[in-house]
Amino acid sequence: MPRFFFHLRCAHKTLADCEGIMVANADAAHRQALATLRDFVQPSTGRVPPEWDGWLMQIADERGRCLFSIPFAEAPALAAREQTPDERPSSRIVYLDIERARREFLSVENEVRRHIHRTTMLVDRTRSQTKALHAMLQAAAEVRQQSQELLTRSRSQSSIGDWCWAQAAATRGEPATVSQRGVI
Amino acid sequence: MSHTAASSMIPDLKASGVERNRLLAALPPADLALLSPHLVEISLETGAVLQEPAQPIKRVYFPHSGLVSLLGILPEGQAIDTASIGRDGAIGLSAGLGAHTALSRAVVQLPGRAAQIAPGRLAEAAAHSRAVQDMIVRYGDVLLAQVQHAVVCNTVHHVQERLCRWLLHAHDRIEGDTVPITQEFLSGMLGVQRTTVTAICRMLQADNIVDVRRGRIHIRDVAALERRSCSCYRVVRRLTDHAA
Image 1 (cartoon, rainbow over the protein chains, first blue to last red):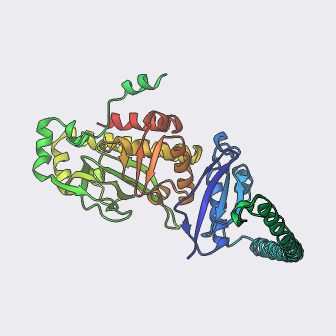
Image 2 (cartoon, rainbow over the protein chains, first blue to last red):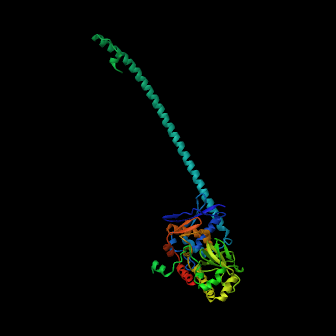
Image 3 (spheres, rainbow over the protein chains, first blue to last red):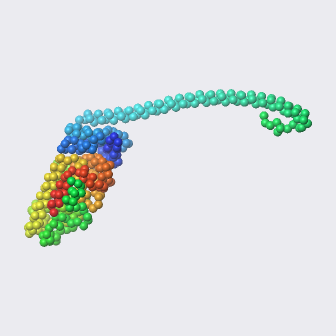
């Protein structure tokens, strides 16, 4: 049998039910919650004690999903139309099942939407990265060409330089060396 | 009326480990001597059924410690607590005046010790002792008053107040502040859903009044617990104090 947890919540506090109880299914958990709330109605006044104002009982399954919640303020109304589980109209249970199915469907739909969104984003990113890579390749090719030109020019200039140095050294009567010229 | 003033009006019932049954203790020595040779010391184990409705009374019990509940049985099989009997009372006492059949179920809620006696022996002592007769009649009245009060309390007061009241009665009957009771048991006692008991206990715990652990409830703040209880706690305590 699955375990269900009956948490207590109000605006600023949650008192978690760590133990839970085992009941047949979500419908049984719902009946249990209704019976619990009926217990909270004071027999003499038909009201719930003021300290429970603003509190609600939240029923969660083993996976921590909240199935439904009922405010304690609704307890007097629940007690007023007290019914044994057998007398309960079956439409109530069908309604609950549809509600649950709707919630499950919505969560799956949201999941799919998230995946589509992520895939679109990834495709966009790949496209822009390809474009950037292309531009980089082009730039690299240009740089390569420029440096090649620069190298060719500097080679031709260095041969002129060598000649000039040699001439100068010869005028001073010194042997020309590479080290004196520094690096071009 | 302050809490301390109210406390001083009522003798301390808190269990101390060396207590004896107060009905027996209140008997004059000569009258007690009629019973003493036939009293057998036994231990009361949680959940033990001491008597069943419509069944013959086999033994009369005088608890020295622990707590026994008299349960009203509904046709659907549900059993609801109508009176709690500790060392201020007895179970099956009317057998001493000729009653042969039990009228309710008696179940041990908190373990302890008791003196037990055969109904015939008690009847014999009662036949020779005015004090024993008086004890039986007086306690019958107290028990009736206690049950009547429980009926009123169950119809008028909120389950939260009744739960606090039950814990206070139990607290009076134990040593220390930890009541060895499961929430499941408590829900049966009060005739409510188990989820109702766990919800109230969680709220009391959040307010630092009790500490709920598996199979026991530790009382941290007795005064606060009494403020959450209905006034029936004091009323019933006065009744049981008058019994002895």
